Length: 292
Image 1 (cartoon, helix red, strand yellow):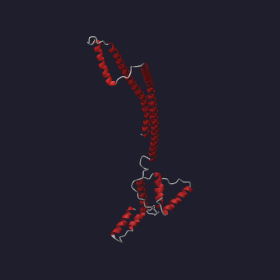
Image 2 (image 1 turned 30 degrees about the horizontal axis):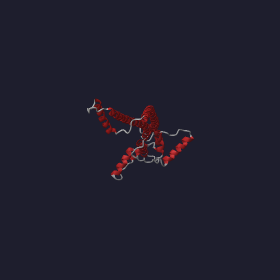
Image 3 (image 1 turned 180 degrees about the horizontal axis):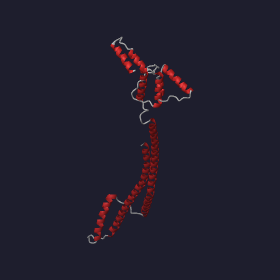
Image 4 (image 1 turned 90 degrees about the horizontal axis):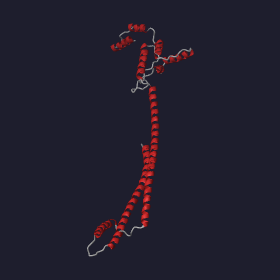
C-alpha cells in the first residue's frame, strides 16, 4: 500500500501542478479581459461627456422654451451621471495611444488563449502517461511478489506430501512408555511378554516397518544381545541376508530362546505342584503354569 500511495502522490502531484499552471495563465487572461472591458466603458463615458459638452454649446434658448434635443440631452446626462457614480468620472477624452494599448492587450489575451488551448492537452497527456508508467511498475512488482508466494506454496505442499498423508510420520501427542528389555531368559512367558510389549509399542508410537528390527535390538540385553551380535557377524561372514523384518526376527527369537518342550515342562510342573504355602501363593503358581 505504501508503494501505491507514493506512486499516486508523485504522478498526480505533477499532473495537478501542470494543470494549475495552465489554469493560472487562463485566469490572468480573464482578468486582463475584465480590465479591457472597464477601460472601454470608461472611454464610452468620456466620449458621451465630450459629446454632451459640444451639444450644450449648440442649444439655443430662444424664447426660453426647451427644444426637443434638449430633452434628449437631459436624459443622456442623467444616464451619464449614474455611470459616473458607478465607475468614477473620466479624467480625459480617449486618446489614440489608449486605443492602441487596448488593442495590444486584446492581442495578448488572444495569444494566451491559444497557448493555453495548445499546452493544456499536451500537459494532461504527459501527466497521464507518467501515472500510467508508475501504475505499470507497481503492477509488475505485485506480479513478482505473487509468483514468489506461489513458489513458496508449492514447496510447502511438496513437503507435506513427502511427509506422508496417513499420519505415520507424525509423532504421538502422548508419551509411549518404553517396553521392558529382554535378557535372554529361556522362558516362554518372558519371551511372549517381550514380543507382545514390542508390538504394542510399535502400534502406539507409529513405528514404520523398516525401523522395527533396529528398535527391537535396542531392547535386547544379556544373552539376548550377545546372540544378536553373533548373528549379525555370522550373517556377514556367510554372506547371508540380514534380518530386516519383524516377523523374521520374532521367529528367530522363538527358535533361540523358547524351549522346545514347553508343553511337557508345563505338564510336569502341574504334576509336581503342591500346596505348601498359602492359598494365594498356590493359586498364583497354578495360574502361571496354566498360562505358560
